[in-house]
Image 1 (tube, rainbow, N blue to C red):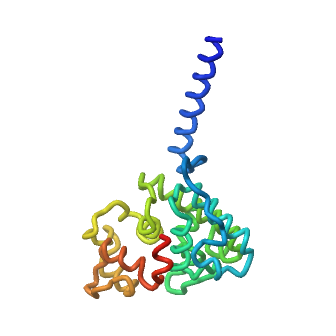
Image 2 (cartoon, one colour):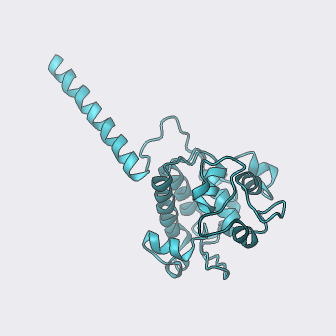
Image 3 (cartoon, rainbow, N blue to C red):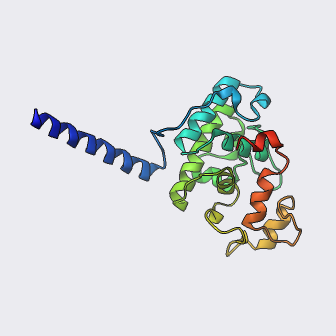
Length: 214
């Protein structure tokens, strides 16, 4: 009996360690203890989905669970702000495409193209949304705990974890270039976008009932 208990204990330890290694290396969460699965039809902006509605909303919940989100509404709100939840949404200024507005270079880095993404259904494109956020988590070593975190990971992942006063820029992309291309986010019009400004922009024009669910 004692031998069986020892073997069982060892097996449990091996399973737990294997899961921890898998989660750390892939960014995926197979198990979310204590997490309540929400009904798909209660997701914010669910009424805007007219194609593959049930499949899409259920997959949004699945993707959110896989990438470790605390609330699937975070992903719905990001996609709404970026594309109006339209998988074929296209911005001719730079070529951003799809549900989270994949940039051409980003799409290629993930193993696809913006042309291919535009031809996908909303359900199919969610596989690439999932892959994008998994890669961002592996690159930044940051969790996407809030709606603002998830949106920042979409828009400017290098700023994840930075204080509100941090200005969005890189060595090759000046702050005013980013601000001029995103005037709606440069709330005070000073040609600099801070993390704090971006967080404020995230919640603008969503409506009180939506914000309450984020």
